[in-house]
Length: 285
Image (cartoon, rainbow, N blue to C red; front, side, top):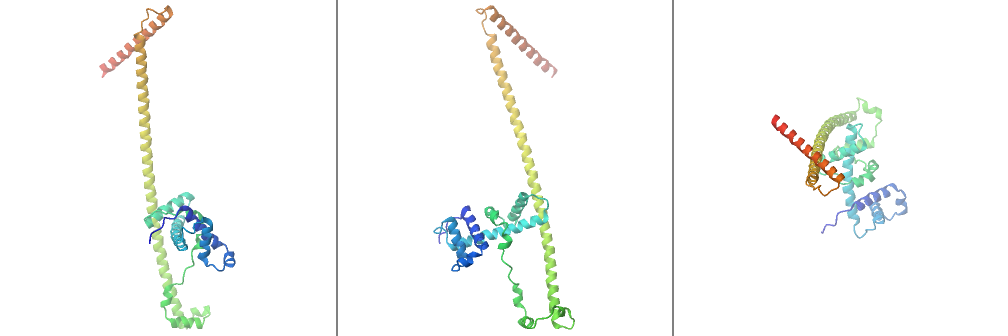
């Protein structure tokens, strides 16, 4: 089967809006009973985009699973950052959550445009946890006996009851793994936060170093520009002085002749003084 084109940002946004519209509208169930849940979502998506012939309902539903799965993982990363990092701005929290997501998933979070729509509805959209499948492996006789003969809670702690040991054992078994899991999770979160802080410090240090190098290069370029401008001005001044020194003043009027003769004298003494200063500096060296 030929694979279709990738979903656009507008289509992703429309899928999220359609999902929320149907999820939040209780009248959809009453007004359109002939449609199931995803029929209504797809119909709303088509109303928002008008591309019924472009995306099938199956394609839209599959895309939603990808969007929500990634957003759920990003939501968990953000929750971890908020638990461990107090005093951060919202932008810094999102930045660290993106880094944590990349660390775990080995790829960047690609649904920021959908996160803007879903972020405040994630808790409502997460389906309720299914019963623990391990309960299916328990003795059916025990389960039937409890269901057919419900016990008063006060009798559960009675030492005379044979069923008490079951409850006590299950309680102890459930508490120990929970405590161990909590400790492991706390340790893992601590390692993640420390690694994240270390990486951020490295990035900040690298950024500061690059900024200093950039400022140094800018200063060197500015210094070279000043030097070039000074050399250019000196060359233009020499050309002007040479032109004045070579001027013939015999055909000029008295005032013009006096002016240019005075300029020639200034140029002469300036040149000789510069030459003398240069010679003295060479003798001293």
